[in-house]
Length: 314
Image (cartoon, rainbow, N blue to C red; front, top):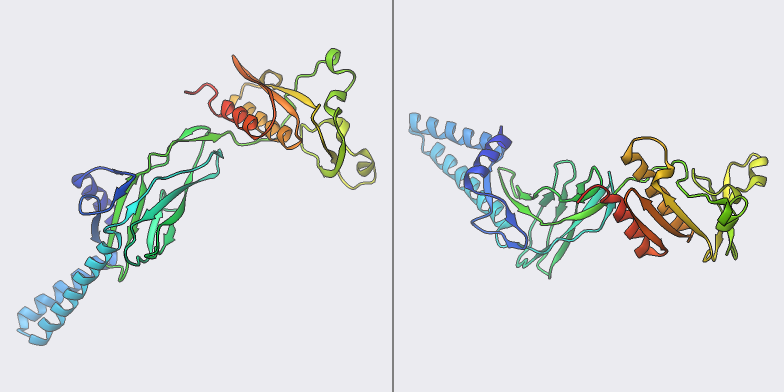
């Protein structure tokens, strides 16, 4: 009931505020909480009883508790009043992960207590800013699918000190960040050309200078790197990891994957891009109507992941 009344009240008084912003009279709203309504009902009953019986002690207690409630309301409002929320920033994540949006709380001239920041009620961050410079807060926002992502309005609220009133504000962060497809293990989308690469998987083994160790096999790892001796001894399926893979190259082609589920194909490609980057291959990416040329390094990996995230999207 309180939440419904709050929504109606919010729509009546105005819209969202945009970062950067200083919280003040125009963008802080306050309403009684559930306990606050119960408190007001009790005060009303006490006042009616005092009037009926002309009880001076009843009047004294009623006005004393009423002044306590008003003082609590002013303190609750003051927890947000004057706060300045600075520029929000974030980094790309994979679909289904939480995107941490960094909020800077500045101009804290006095201690604030139990400020709640959240995009959704399931992940609330509580912070107590101190009057010593700025405070950086990471607030998680839930992502679902790939592509561009803008989190819902940020809510900052407080019901300190007594919980009788709740002050809040809704703020647009203006964050727009990329969300990559969720990695999914699957069949290899590598282009195999025996005429160019020779028999088997030799080209991807060229440049293997330093043996780094064994890692657990994952679908799509080159068969020639499987450590068959460990497998024959019942120790499980492992692949050999090498350093110095400057000569190793592979091309990942979406057309090599079977099926009509485009999102699944993109997730499988994402998995193999990360795998190729981890093994320090030079790799390229071919999508329907577009692609990314051969390359290596973190920037090249991010370009490929970005191409997957924005495939068939603006």
